[in-house]
Length: 110
Length: 113
Image (tube, rainbow over all chains, first blue to last red; front, top):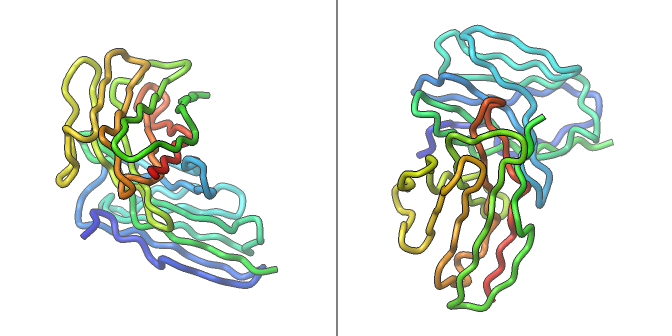
């Protein structure tokens, strides 16, 4: 079992629809990050959340960190084909090692 | 911003040979470096954590004698895949932890033939 349970693993939607990706764990994290990864490249950081209950917005993306710092969500409003990609949540515990969720492969159809 | 340079980006080697992958933090000092492996259509799996000047800590199931990690300076860590076999073919990614947080390299696609 993975430390971080990410869902859904696959998501295919039409342009303009909204979606939410979830990242859950039984562990507490000092910080949680969301990445987007293109094929053959390293992951690119979207956001870092560190405070329980924190909400951050990045254009059409809204990130939330759970009050207990065990879970997080990524919400995309009015998805566009350019949002297609692999989205990864990753959590760092007190020993600093960062572990990833299984990833969500998003496809946005025009 | 922080940049981590990872080389080579692609390598093809013969079965039984060894391959070295380098990971350099270009404009910051990395107190800790992490090595991940990613199989097609899967997420990143942590292989090992290394701190400068000390032995790497390997995750369960990762053979330390096969995946040699050296972190000789605060800006350089290397991963050597020894006696590579086709099942070692994968995408290897490093990450450096420093003053800017976690910064990832661009990855190395290893193909063992």
